[in-house]
Structures are given as C-alpha cells and as structure tokens.
Length: 271
Length: 178
Image (cartoon, rainbow over all chains, first blue to last red; front, side, top):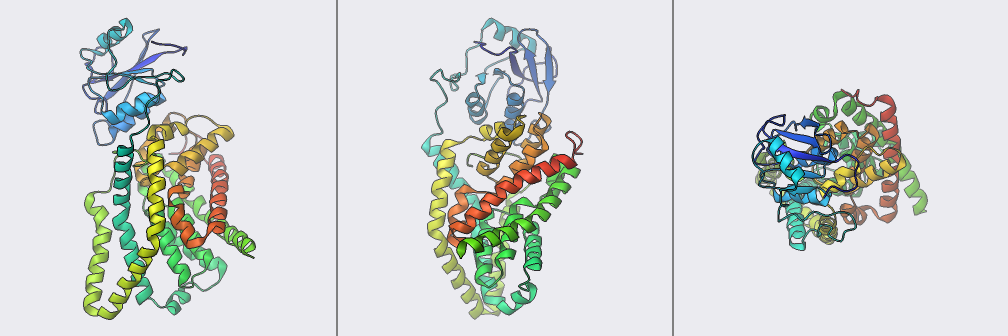
C-alpha cells in the first residue's frame, strides 16, 4: 500500500491537535489535520485559517497536497474534495471514528477499506482517475457562462449609452491623441475598473471605434486584469501589504511600455 | 467553473453585489427612456447590434470553456505553483495563470496557502500576471482587434510577467512580504 516514498505520511481529520483528539466527521470542516509519519509515528497538526467556513474543503485539499500525504482518513469527504485528492494520488478512507491515534493504528494494520467512490491510483497502474464527465463539464461551463452573462450584457448596454450620449469630441477632449498621455489615461481607467477581461475587450473595441487611440485601449486592457485597485485590500490581506502594493505599482508602470511596444509592433506588422 | 477556478472558494461578493451593476444599468436605462426616449432607444439599438456581433465569438468562448472544464482540474493548477524554481517553475506558473479562471479574489486564499508551502514571489507574480491571457476569451478579442494584435499583446504579456516576477523577487525577500 505504501510504496515508493522514503517518508510516508497520512492526514487525519481531527477535532484537536494531538493523537488523543477525536477524529473529525467532515474533512473540509475539521479544525485540524493531524499529519502522522507512518514509520516514526511523529506527528504535526496543521490548520486552515478558514476551517469550517465556505471554501475550507479546497483549502484542506491544498494542505493535504502540500504535506505530500499518501492518504486521508476522515469520517466523510465530499465528492469534490475526494476527486481532487484521488486525482493527485492520495487515498481517501472514510467512515473513520475514534481518536486520531486509534485511526492511525488501524490504518497501519490495514483495517480500513478505501472509500468506494474513490478508487485510488498510482501513476501508470492503469487506474488513473476518469476524466470529468461531459455532463458535469457542461454544467460547469453553463454556470460559468451564467455568471459572466449579466455583467457582460450590462457592459454592452453601457457601451450603447456611451455611443449614443457621449460625443466623439468629448472623448477626444479627454484623450488628446498624445500617445504617452493616452496610454497613461487608459492605464488609470483599467486599474480602477475590474471584472471579467471580456468586458475590457468589448469596451476597448467600442472605444477604438469611437476614435480613441490603440495606445489607450491597450493600456486599459492590460491593466484591467494585472492591476486591481478594487481588489487591493483582499490581495494585501492574503499576500501581504508590501507584496500587493509593489506588485500593483510595478504592473501599472509596466503596462505603459507594454502598450506602446504592442502598438508599435502591431503597426509594423500591419504595414 | 472551469479548470481553474477554486470551486466554492470563499467569495467576498454576495449576490446583491453581483447584481448591483446590472440592476444599476437597467435603472439608468429606465431614467433615460423617460427623459431622452429617442437617444435611449438609439443606445439600446446600438447595444443590440454590439451583442449580435458578439454571438459567434461567444459561442466559441463556450466551446473552449467546455474543453477546459473537461480536461483540467483546480488541484492540478495548485500543483503548478509548487516550490519548483527556475525556468520550469516559471513556465508552470505561467500555464497555471493562463488556464485559471474565475474572480481573482477566489484565488487569494489558495495563493496565500501555496506561498506558505514554499511557492516563491516569482511564481505568484507570474501566475497573477498571466491571468491576463485568457485562451477561452480569445475569440472575442480577435473579433475586435485581429490576430496580429492579439498575438503581439499575448506574447508581450507573457514575456513581461517573467520580468515583473524577477523584479518583484529582487525587491521583496522571500518570507518578508508582510
């Protein structure tokens, strides 16, 4: 069962941080994952900052992956978490009860049956996980599209308003035709605006038809995704203030030459 | 969601937040139809024309989205951001950013987690920057701007991501980003 690796570890969903703690019923909701070394019996308890909250299941999967465990022992594991774990070669054993230590000993003795829904696999053993079913992929795609649709239609409606209510001369007065200034304005707008990039393409395309320079439109599209003023607080909270501020600042500055060079190369190619 | 989006990831955006923008636009239209009916009608007709022009590219977007959903899993993308340094790690981070999808704030908790496990600033930066390259949205972009422009911008974006990643890693020492 435990082939190959020099250090074999298992992750046990737990209510506490040691071997005497009770095993947790739900993998994604458990306060701790106790990682036990199969050979030495040494253990460490790791916890997800969002344990018990929405999205914690995926974080628990990431924790298990990052700890290179070979198996997960838990009372219950959701189909989504299970599919991610098994897809990465981690065995999932459900129906586990008692303390963490007891579960570990049972696992060592080979007392557990793998959960029926998640046949594990080893690379090349011919039992790799089946690809996502077409129905599920279709459902996911439809859901994605449905999420994207309301905002995209709203943007198209706004573009219609822009065409009908804002004159070309007004736009021309804001965007002067000076490549440097236009690029800067485009980058500023793109940094403030946020959302799916498809909306930046639609807005950019319409602005181009209104006579706005390609420099400004390119800068708007580049910064739309790479710089996020609106998302900055969330990025600072997750990745650190310094990282988030520097990353956004560098991306903003970089958008200017990228836009100019893109348009210059495009103009050369178009000749 | 496609391959890339962390499913059920914690989202700070409640339903009303998602609908606020569309509802606001409808309210604006309602007001404008009352005050300037002719122009508002012109705006609506213009919007319908834009939308019709987008139908074919959007159809292609859906097909590519479906293909991604069939072939990729979120956990695979998480693995792209491992500790692997060097050119291989950068290429994997680029690939992860390109095929990832969904709102960026859904990715932050996962990125924070993989960073704790050893992913470097270069990997995170390259991943975030390459989110600007969206293969499944290319049909729409090409419909508006053409192949040559889209190809040039895509290439420069990917190239710039490496430079920005290196720049950031020079400015911020690993594990001292707070």
